[in-house]
Amino acid sequence: MKFTFAHNNINVLDLEESLVFYKSALGLEEVRRHEAKDGSFVLVYLGDGRTSHRLELTWLRDRKEPYNLGDNEIHLAFTVDDYAAAYAKHKEMGIVCYENPAMGIYFIEDPDGYWLEVIPEKR
View 1 (cartoon, one colour):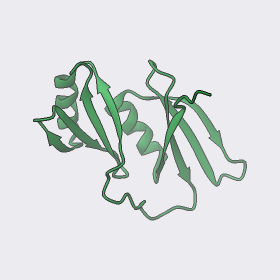
View 2 (cartoon, helix red, strand yellow):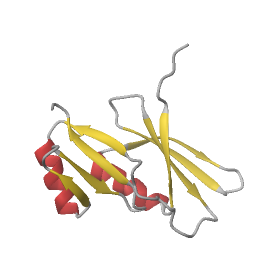
View 3 (cartoon, one colour):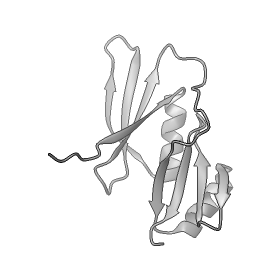
């Protein structure tokens, strides 16, 4: 028996704002969408165009208060082929929320407060 990663899920308050963020910050594109017949939720799956792994954004119509993200110890990580260019872009966007130069990594924060780790592709 073998298991393969399929997707990770995060819940978002403003789906359109999140779609713009993930496209502009990380180049993720919508690959699939499912909308509830009653309009109570929307699931949008984002892909990087290189792997089969997906990020599922879940929007719940009746949710108005921000999600409790705890201490943000749970996060997603992305490798990037041009770390310096990515870092400069994210600094310009004002979304770098934590840096660890000694480890050669940094984190960006999405509109809902989720932290996303950025790692150079070759370390």
